[in-house]
Image (cartoon, rainbow, N blue to C red; front, side, top):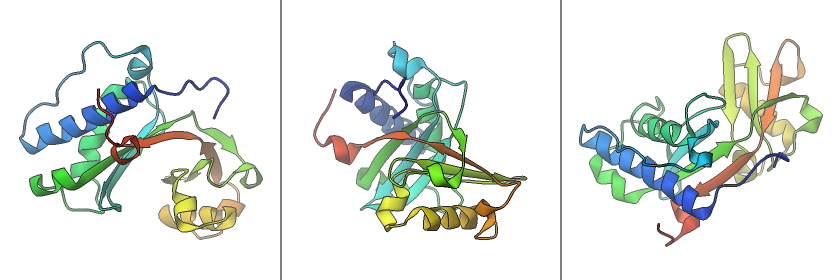
Length: 192
């Protein structure tokens, strides 16, 4: 991770996961998401973050933001709702699916412009930008599929609807970032 990166405590991780779940549950009831009282300084600080939803290890929604001025805990609440109901790849989450949902949060370091040779598979998430086309892949994606660096960048281009070799050609820009990844499943029975 970046030298100035301070990992969240397990309690803070669990508070964010609970905030995500409570926000989704409130949206299913058409209620306002609950507010977090007295968040820690880490949870109140702005931070890029992605919220991924899984049901039986299958992706069910994923929405995020690389940078923001919004406090982390507020971003998590907003993005959890967006992942559940607004990811265009999936139908909106139903009440019946809530109990089977595993929520995963990826807290991001600031993205840094980079070149392909400096990307480390498994450590770095990547973002590509070419004109108005953009795409992001989180650090955990490439190892999950057994991709090497070239395949990772090719898949990133495909996700952005670019030619598969666009990552090799200017004016395409590449950015890398790292992530602190945790989920309800990874924290097991821990509760606050």
